[in-house]
Length: 175
Image (cartoon, rainbow, N blue to C red):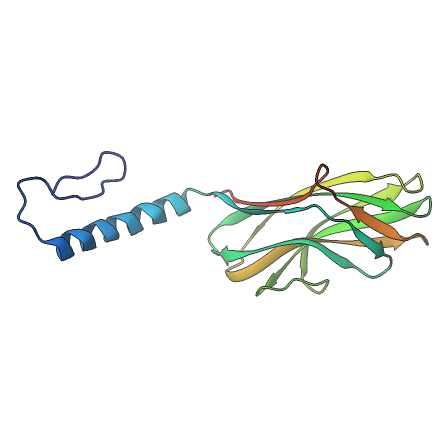
């Protein structure tokens, strides 16, 4: 059977003896092989966009944004989280963390693999926070995400998002 030039997918030539089941099986096997090659090349895994704010956070860590996917322990993943945080009191310290946990639910007990602290210098003024980290050695169904907490101070923290100012979580396979 001839093959396509890019992925070497087999297909029947006009002169081949018809054998639908065998030809479909050959094509299905070739497609699986090609998709495995695409997955091995890395790239986009998934993203979440939040358009609603999370208000009332304080000294208790809250989950902000999450993404669940099937991880491969041989891969390294790049995680980018962007949030906007503000405090009801000046000079509070706010921490945004990246965490992961096996399964489909992330909480503040998830394993931390990155964090950024920022100072809320002005009352009720949003502070953009972007954190980018990589993680490897995880496998199976996992949930990656961002969490936030007031690290010090007394204000109530709001993690802002709207339809025009999204909170964002992006996961990419990078090797």
